[in-house]
Length: 159
Image: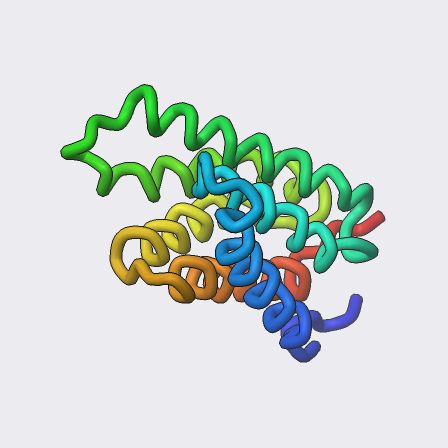
C-alpha cells in the first residue's frame, strides 16, 4: 500500500477551486440580480463542477446538488432567519451546502464528514467575518479547496 502522506498536494486543484469559487461569486449576481446569493451559488456550483470533472464519478451531480443546496439554503434563510440574526445565515448556508455535497463526497473519499465542518467554517469566514467583493468567494474557495486536496490525497476510497 503506497504511503499517501508522502504524495504531494494537488496545488493546481486548490488554485482552480479558488478561481472557480471566486469567479462564481462575482459573476452570479451579474447573470441574475434578482436573487444574488442564490445566483452566485449556482454559478459557483457550475464552475466547481468543471474543476471536479474527471476527478470524481458523475461530477455533474456536484453542480445539481450544490445548486439545490444554495437555493434551498437561501429560501430557508429568507423564511426562518430574522433580520437581527443574519449572523446565523452563513453557518446555516454553509451547513446546508456542505451536507448536500457530503452526500456525494462520502462515496469518493474517507473522512468526508470533515467537508461539512469545512463548509460551515469557510462560508462563515467569507460572509460574516471577512466579507467583501473578492474575499466572500476567495476565502471559502481557499478553505474548502484545501480540505478537498487533503481529502483527495489522504482518503480516496478504493474501487
